[in-house]
Amino acid sequence: MGSIFRKELAAFFSSLIGYISIGVFLTIMGLVIWVFPDTSLLNYQYATLDQLFDLAPIVFLFLIPAIAMRMFAEEQQTGTFELLVTRPLTDLQIVLGKYLATLVLVLFALAPTVLYYYTVWQLGSPKGNIDSGAVIGSYIGLIFLASAFSAIGVFASALSQNQIVAFVLAVFLSFFVHWGFDFFSRLPVFVGKWDSIVEMIGMAYHYASISRGLIDSRDVIYFLSVTAFFLAATLTALDRRRW
Image (cartoon, rainbow, N blue to C red):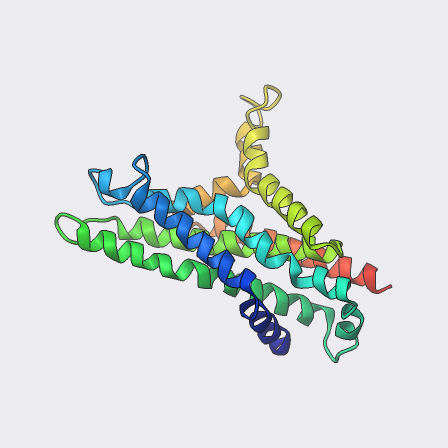
């Protein structure tokens, strides 16, 4: 598993797509938080990073599929998938290696945003006048969200030999699992009856819950379950493709 993990990290940073993906992510975040007048922290009357945590899921929706789309699709497209499965590795080790590589790359892109927190902490009046508990909870929520999106991206990559198809499929699945159930809960057939239950199936509900700064075990179990489900689905897809 370690060899797969290191191979994917090296392949990512040996191509321009890695640096471009991370650069675009940080540029968008920086513009929203510091430049655009409607969302700029400099125009707010209080210290907050809500803009970062509200926008991050939308950016993740495209960033993570862009990172994960090549994980299996490229192997199948270039014909190296057959060589990969003949190595002394189990399917689980292969999937976990590629999944962890995707997640670490996303966290690597997210890490520089900690400077935003330090900057806001310094600019607060008085210094440090920011809800650190909510910020930490929001970062934990982003990590769980990245974990689930990474599992979805790897699953989509295992379904297709075409990286563009894998990207589009990952974007669709991530959008549906995160926001889809929230939209469904507003349908007249669910309103007043099952709307709260339908809403709780989606990731948006649990991400918002963690972002309040309170780590609920139900939210943690939910994200771990979604991640495990799509990793198991990836194993099933690989097994069928192997046969």
